[in-house]
Length: 265
Image (cartoon, rainbow, N blue to C red; front, side, top):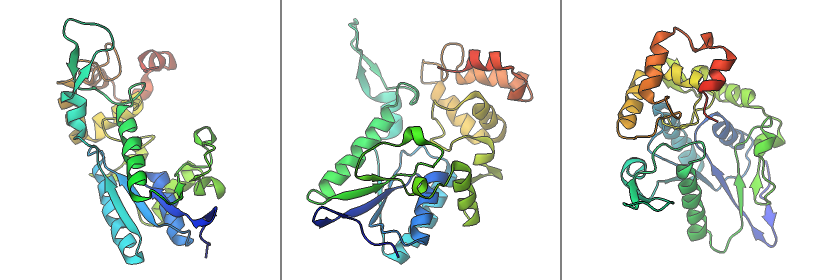
């Protein structure tokens, strides 16, 4: 059994943040299997996750309850859609009317929801552990070294055990977890299972959502109808993409030049 980690003279609180994607879920399962100390599991719910994320969350909550591990679910201060579509936002440059409504799409250089997430998690730490040291487990795989930050309180169990992204996914499958959406396994059509409205999705992923996940595509259409900015930049709104996708049977017929031309840098 792994021993608690001490920082200075105080025993640290061990906090695991889990999005219930393949890497963070594999990290949680690993900690449970190897008896690595975990005092609290935190899930930040944007309200814009795929249904399978919530299904895996509900299943893990039962396991944590049996093991006496605290589960905390955090939420944005305001509903995600309010910040996306309604919140008054002041223009940086001087205009006749100084405000527009909503931040718009989240992703790329406008990762406003990520900022809110980090702020909410740090607020939780300050309020719950004002006088205690914490060890924060981060679900980054061994083949993502560019994402590792040299911060003393952050620990990377997957990196320490050399588990790659592919191995993390298989580890979850082996333990009976999946990301099934109406018979479609998300990791068979998406590179990453983030929020369904994340602007960072590439053309291949968007084409697969259009073809295989009509429920989510309709939601994207609904958001685009209320956001002036095209999802992937000029000439590449959800409606433009839908027209383009409908003209081709597979995104793979685009040559590399076309893909680069369409991609959002």
